[in-house]
Image 1 (cartoon, rainbow, N blue to C red):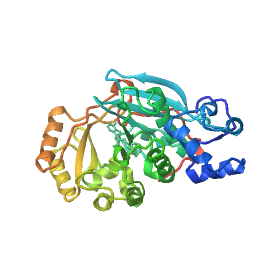
Image 2: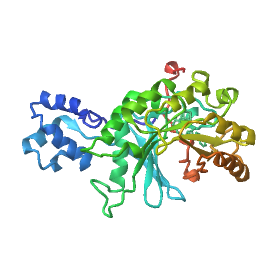
Image 3: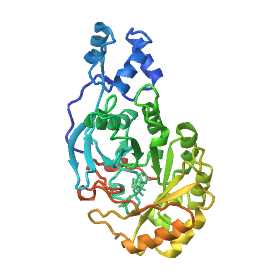
Image 4: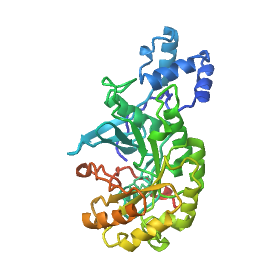
Length: 366
Ligand code: SAH
Ligand code: SF4
């Protein structure tokens, strides 16, 4: 763990749902209609300073400022890669750190948000997996990653040129979002709220390594796009690459995908498949993949393995990846090869890691 930042003991308003916000306001004798006003200032206008909330009476502004804060994480650094992906190292008040990445495209861009400090799982190809989990992020810490990025690109309430740089969110940063489901759900509901940030569920993708019991809930309650980190087509291999498979094997995972409430032909489930040289990249694997996902509205994202220091894998060659893609494609599935972004600054998929560590005696097991 790195040095602690100075602690501001005022309670954070970010991350509270409307009912909680109401309770806080009533407790300090503020009127219930302030919830709507505050929500507008915090999540539509993006203001952090109560003194700028001009529709509130001056006494209320002072009152609120004495007791509450609207928190953003501290930025330890932000760097930009050769291909314009940007990575932030963010520090929370207890000194724990996470990474967040912005991946710009021509007319839009995705913000890759973290859901945990580290990850309890240890997929063998993933850098985050080599870091011991420290803790779940709170709803506030998830929402405020996004809010900080909007500050950075000056997009409150709307960008000057009318085009949002941050048009999408992917929960593909550090951590397994479905192992922190309650906090992730609360954060996403705030982000989707129509009177605030109002990002559509169609612009949000949650990626999971396969926490089967939470998949249905995610579809009914949040309705966001689902991405599944599949990476292997036999249980023997997937047990080694994604150890969570021992708990919920491929057949169970795919059953949950078939039943995912928010998927249809217009909104397909993305299967992520990291291409590991000589491990999972044969043409037999490709054919088996196609057989497995039959009947699921799906697309397959082929991800060239992104190296990290000490990683025990190599990426498959471009030729192999293309041949693999063509088999999947001929079977009727779109199978784009993901262009690695931000590799030079270790910002690409699976390269994120912070130096926050969990004390050894509290290490959690699956
Ligand atoms: N824990 C969730 C969310 C993280 S998403 C999950 O695993 O789905 C990060 C994505 O990048 C996952 O699909 C993951 O399997 C993939 N990934 C991890 N390490 C990688 C690496 N070194 N190269 C390419 N992709 C990787
Ligand atoms: Fe955790 Fe996902 Fe990395 Fe696996 S791939 S260790 S689940 S972050």
